[in-house]
Structures are given as structure tokens and as C-alpha cells.
Length: 520
Image 1 (tube, rainbow, N blue to C red):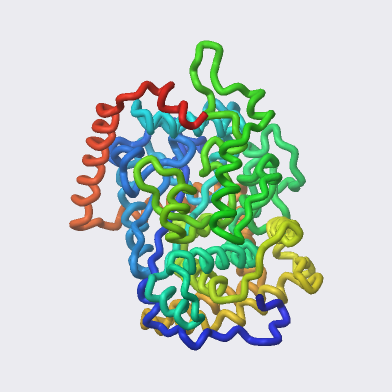
Image 2: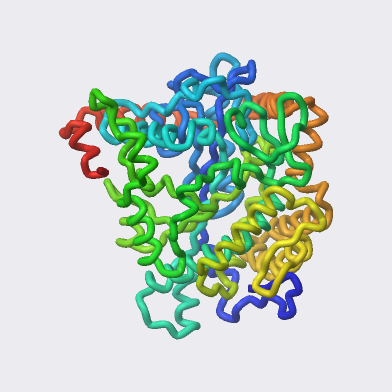
């Protein structure tokens, strides 16, 4: 891949033209906490007006009952995707009660003195619903509930068969198209992992945390005020050791060089007991389950990575079974902090940049990713997380140390042809504008979201004061926006989701004990 001193400029392949990108699809999954007006995490049930969180296609919850997750459809343009995400935010704002706020920052604030006050998402009495709640109970046992209240944004992206088919023909490959797609999507995954510091520096927005989040944890942060901690040049503490990471998974050797290798690694982790989790027990003395199993991963979703190859599951399929059966269908980019300045958690500049980056990763050379390089990339990630805005910080490349800012600039400059082609595809200037914004952040660290968040947090007097001010501004703005005819559509979806959950609950035939036996 191009290094900071890009001696050979990135060149688009001859076979690629703007028409082949029309079939791209993108979707967003955005998490966010419901907060009480006094600053503590909401303990109220999921709002009834939002329907069933088990079966609603667009509005569900992640770990906690108060951790909402909004999911768009896969759509044909960035603008359409952001428009639907905005609709979902309007629906949520109209449904919130008791002056609750939709927290707009990745790191939680004012949690509670006890983990037990962070209520697990309750998905009802069906076996599938009870399994989801049990999984969350197991996560709390294993890692604590505070870590599970961190919110992020996942950007999902796919490229069409015409794109891959033309590419395959140009390279003279005669394998099945699905095998070619799998190889190319995994090449994207490997390069995204290599270029992760770009995302952390340019979009990271969690340089500080509330003191409550650190209760009972060792850390290396500095006091920001009497209720918060930070690092002066941090970008995304969410993506570092304080975020959603755990030591058990550090030892997993899940590789991204071939799809069968990736699937086998996941399935082995799901099938292998871990003595620490065995010691926790999987049932209480009266037989009540406390975690799905004592394996390294209870289910595959427990595996944390900044990017995942995905395939839509069918029926009771696991993610790896879906991948093995039908190959990679899309890529899930999971490294984005919420943008607290955006009413919907992401700006159009960030969305467009993620697409530029993904296509750049896809088209760049991508050698196998082996353990020694993985170790380097982990070091680079921590440096970008903890000190990314330090103008002297360096990262490790195959050719030695490089100043992060020079490395960022080299890659961003090399992306211009990609941004230009995407603008040609959609008849816009939004991609080149996004790249210009990111180059500005590269050259002026004070323009990064993390620098702005830190400055505004200090000005406001703390994380809660700053976050509450923004949440109130966003609520006021969103409540003034109308869904028009779409209001009836979302009301029908909510009602239908409740009916769907009731049908699931009525149609269960197995006891829950028998149902979870297949996972043990």
C-alpha cells in the first residue's frame, strides 16, 4: 500500500468507471443512550411508541434497555441514507417521555453507583428474545456493564456484482464470482485495519470520559476537572484499552486472509471453553442461566473488531454460517465515534470519507496480514488513540517509523482520484469536499472533532454539561422537523413489530433449557 512518502501516486485501474459504482449500497447502524434530565442513564422501559425492539426492522436496542440502536436500509446514496437516519431520530425524539434526552456522545456519562442499575435490554418471553437478554447478562458478568454502554456508529457498505464482475474479467480470473468477491472484500478488511489511524485521527470524538465510567478501573488518564478525565492529545478513547476491548480476545488468532480461515477462527472461539468464564458458572444454583455458555465467545457477535465481513443471516443461521453459505455480502466499518455536533451522529463529510477510504482500501494492494504486522497495527492503534494529535507522534510501517501526520497526508493525497470518481458517479462535489475537510484536519489538529470536543467540554464545565447542551439543541431541532406522510409508515411498523413479537412468543415449542442447549 502507499506509504507516507507515496513515491508512486495511487492510480485507478483502467477497468473502473463511474457507472460501476452506481450499484454501491450503504447503511448505518447508530447507537445512543437515553438519559434522564438529571444526567443519569435512563431506567425506563423502551418507549412503547417505538414498537418491539426484538422485531422492529429499524429501531432496536444494543446492550442496555436504554441503549437505542437505529438501523437504516441499504440505500443508493449517502443522502438517502442520512435522510432515513434523520427520520429515525425524529421518530425517537417524538417517543421519548419524562424529558429524557438522546445522548449524542460515544462515551456514557453519570451512569450509576452500581452495575445493576444499568438495566439489560429485555426482549420478551420468546426463546430468541430470552437468548438475546441472556447474552447481555453474560457480557455483564464477563466484562462489567459499564463497558457495554459505549455507543458507536457502524457504516455498512457493499459493491455490486457488475463492479466485481468487470474487475474479475479484467484480471482474467475464472473462479466463481462469489470467491472473487470474498477475496476482494477481505483485501479491503486487511487494508482498513492497516489504515485505522486515519479514522481515529480524523473522526475520533472521545478524548475525555466521565469519572463515573472509570469506577473500579485502572487507567492512565489525567484529571480534566473534578468529574472527568482525559489525555491532552487523545482522539478516540472508545477505540483504546478503556473502550470495548478485552484481554481474552487479544489472544484469539482470527485471520482475514481467506474466508474459510476467518470462519474457522470464529467458530473455534465460539466452541472453546475459557477457564475464567467457566469459573463464573453458566447457571445459578437453582438452574437459572447466567450466560449462554463458558466459551471464549458466547456467540460470534461477541468478537470485537474495527471491521467485519458480513452476510445477512437467514432463519437461525449464525453470522459465520451465513458467510460460509453465501460469501461476503457487505463490509461493516465499526470504528466511528458518534459525532456529537450532528443531530444524527454523523456528518455527510464523514460518511463520504468512509466510502472514499473503503474504495481506496479495496483497490490498493493488500498482502496477507500476519501476526507480526498485527502486533505493529495494535501499537499504531494505541498511539493514534492516546496521542494522535501530538504533532511528533509516530507510527510503525513496513519501512520503519513515520510521523503520523505525514502518513495521514500521504494517504489522503493519494485518495483524490477515488473521491473524484465517486463525485462523477453521483454528479456531485461532496466526496472531494469531504476529502478537503479531512486534509484540513490532517494539517490543523485543532480542527479535528476530538480537539473541538475537548475545547468545548472545558468551556462547558464538564462532559455532562457539554453533552446535555448538545442533546437539548438536537432534541429541539428534531422535534421541529416533520415526518410528513412517513409518520404513518413508522407507526405501522411499530404496531406490526409488536404483533410479530407476540407471534414469536406464541409459536415457541421448545423450553428455554432445550433451546439454549444447542449453544452449549
